[in-house]
Each structure stands twice: as C-alpha cells, then as structure tokens.
Amino acid sequence: MSAERTFSIIKPDAVAAGQAGQILAMIQEAGFKILAMRMTRLTEAQAREFYGVHSARPFFGGLVKFMTEGPIVVMALERENAIKGLREVMGATNPANAAEGTVRKRFAADIERNCIHGSDAPETAGQELRFFFSGADLL
Ligand code: CMP
Image (cartoon, rainbow, N blue to C red; front, side):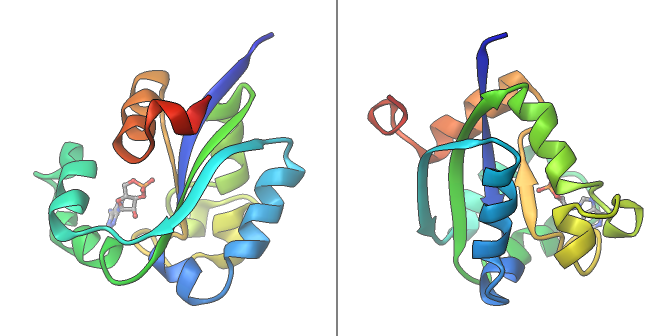
C-alpha cells in the first residue's frame, strides 16, 4: 500500500477553545505524518470559495460566518488510506452521531461548530491541499 495525502482544518471553535494541541495529538497517534501546517484566518471570500460546493445550502451563510470568526490551523497529512482514516479520527459530521473517542464526539458542539474538517475524496483532497499550500510546502 502506498501513502495517501489528505487535507484538514482545525476550525475556529476548537482553536479558540485551546483544543488544537489535543486534536493534533489524536491525529498523530492515528499514524499521520504532518507534511505542512500553519495557523491562518480565512477571509469571507476564501471561506465562500473553499465551501463553494455548499453555496446553495441553507447553512452556507452560517458556515462562512463561523469559519471566518477566528484563527484556524490548516494541515497537509500523509498516511496509508489517509482520507478514510482521517474521517474515522474525526467522527460523523454531526457530533450527536459521532463514535466514542473521535474528535467530534470529544470536542464538537453541533453539526456546524464541529471542530475539524477533512477532505472527503482524492479529488477534493488535491484541490483543498492546493488551496492552502504550494508545491514546495508539500515536497
Ligand atoms: P465540513 O466537514 O467542514 O464540511 C462542510 C461543513 O458544513 C461541515 O463540516 C459543517 O461545519 C457544516 N455543516 C454541514 N451540514 C450542516 C448543517 N446541516 N447545518 C449546519 N452546518 C452544517
């Protein structure tokens, strides 16, 4: 099996609550290598573009507001089966449905303020990695 890459965001709720370190530890304990990482803030335009696939959804405005309310931590991660594996570490989108021991079960408040994002497929992982990182970051 070969290593796969995925993209993740520790969202503003978790950064503000001081949970970024614990979430990073959970990711690393699950065997992920951190290829690149930085703390940043999304502008409204960036948030609208990043979540463009959801632009027709009723929650889009709230999602953009939430994602721009404070700093986030963006990461490029590598592991075998990284995309599926990270989604297992994160737990279900709605923390009410998330399994015990997952990031969202431990830390998330609700379906919107859900602490962490992870790419859902190889194509989106590539797009999302390129959105935040240059090729040189990912060597
Ligand atoms: P994420 O995995 O980053 O992908 C899209 C985000 O939209 C999701 O996490 C949640 O933060 C948010 N989201 C998804 N579904 C809903 C919903 N029904 N209501 C509010 N926010 C949602």
